[in-house]
Length: 63
Image (cartoon, rainbow, N blue to C red; front, side, top):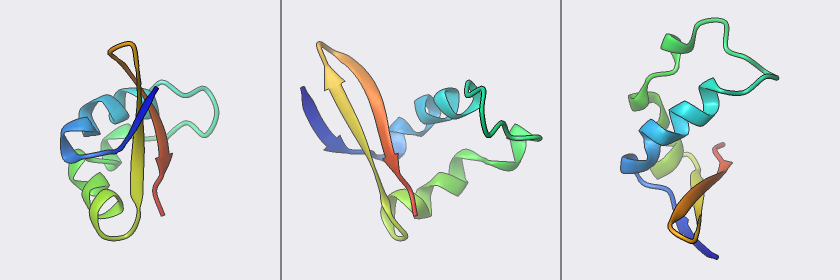
């Protein structure tokens, strides 16, 4: 298991996970753009990716 800091390249997959949730569903998913993740990954907080056997899972701590 390898943990690394999430990057902008991870955002599309993070969007897929975010839009697949059954709880805390966004009423309008288009409001959360890929660009809106960037400050939370680079300046206001950070996110983490865990890679297991070449598959990624996301552990987000976006502040």
